[in-house]
Structures are given as structure tokens and as C-alpha cells.
Image (cartoon, rainbow, N blue to C red; front, side, top):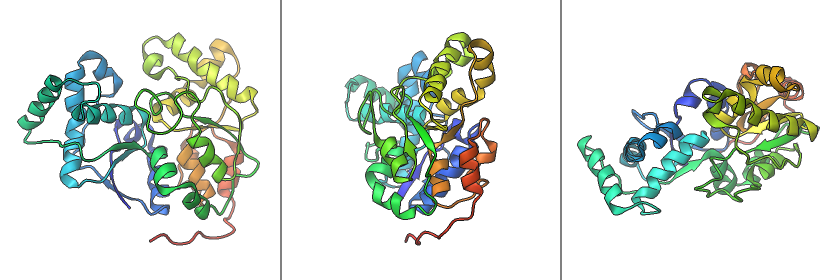
Length: 302
């Protein structure tokens, strides 16, 4: 099955293990990811807060280029990129946006010899894996179940609000079900859709650290071995600042992993293929399982 692939700056930069594991598990599931040619930064939420029309036009350029390549859905592993691309896509369908605003963005695209009809849908990879490929396809690929590993599923806020097409807004279950399909023990984690603070760690640092501390402490209190993240910025906040969180509030030492890394280990892939050795706070149980020899090889997907 073919898709357009939008990496985004965060995944392509500081979160390379997310991209490495994402592309590997997509290939294992028979997903053909065609990277969008000459893609640009989506502007993230920062640009959207300064000038929404220009931000929507910036994101629309990626949508227009992808549409020229074909009508397949656009897939990204980044929660922030998904949200911005979805907002721009919705603008062309009138969802909460005026015709005047839509014409402004069309004019901006026209200046770059581009146009967009809105035929392809931006989607987060978690949505595609669970709702298009299906949990049975995931189970069929598992050769090394994540037995004995307790996982706290963490969605963050951007893939479930406000343009949610995944599942529940405040207590989503898609990632929970996916982790169960991998053989993991999923802990009940009420903070699963609570904001990690986003870019607050770079602007109002103490508040950002406190928001991360709440999530880390609750995951540990509930007995999780690792927090599974579905967004590069969430992963960055929950792993990169644990030393500062510990100094400010105590605690710390809570392993984190991208959910695609957990998929890859369960699919029989190696620690290095999943980039697990690059994670700042690694999960010993996951590393040990990833280093073990797979008992069987999964069937080839055509």
C-alpha cells in the first residue's frame, strides 16, 4: 500500500531513531512510503501562533506537492506536523475556515505555480497502523512478544485534539490496543493525552519541567517499565530533561521509547535497527529483549 511520507524537521533532526524505526516497521507491514519531494518545515505551532494564514500556506505547499505526486494519503510520525498539515487540509474543505482565507492560501500557492484540491488526507502513523493496516496484520508480524514489559501509552495532545480522527479525545485507546497486540502489559495511564508542555521547556522552563515531571512520576507510580511515545516533541521533553526534572522536583529515571521501536523489537528487529542505543533513558528490559535472537522470522509481505 502506497503513502506519501512527510518526515518533518523534528523527526529528521533530533529524533532520528523515530524515523529509523518508523520506516523499518512500515516496510515490515508492506507500506510503501514515498517521501514528499522538496518538502519544507510545516511551521509547527509557533508559526501558527504568529500568522495563521501564512502558516497554513506554508503547510499547504507540502500538501500541494504531495498531490502532484498522487492522491495517496500523507503520513507523518510527528504529532505537531500532523496537526498543522490537518489544519491546512481542513481549510480547503471549509472546516472552520472562511472562503476568503482559503482564497488567500490558494493565491499564495499560485505564486509558486502550485495548487491544491484537497484530495489527499494527512494522517498520523498510529492511525494508519491501527485503522488501515489493522491489529491482525501487526499480530501476524510479531515473533518476539513484549511479554513482561509494562508500558505506559502516551499519545500527547496534538494527535487527539482538536482535529482528532484517531479515537477518543481524552482517553484514546488505539495505542493501548497496538501495544497489547505486541504482547506488552499495558498499564492504565490516565495522563495519556495530557500535554507534555510542548515548547514551554524552551520559553517558560520551570513550567515545562513541571508538566514533564507529572507525567514521568505518574508512569513510575503505576509501575511502568517504559513510556511509549507517539510524538517526537513529547519524547524529547520526557527524556531530554530528566536530569533537570530530577534536580528541580526529585524522581526521574523513567525510560522512554518511540512506539515504533517497541513494534520493531516485537517484529524481531535488532537494537541498532531500532536506534534503541540512541535513546537518552533506555529501558533495560526492552534492550535485553531486542538483543535476543528472534525465535522465528515473520512471513514476507507483498
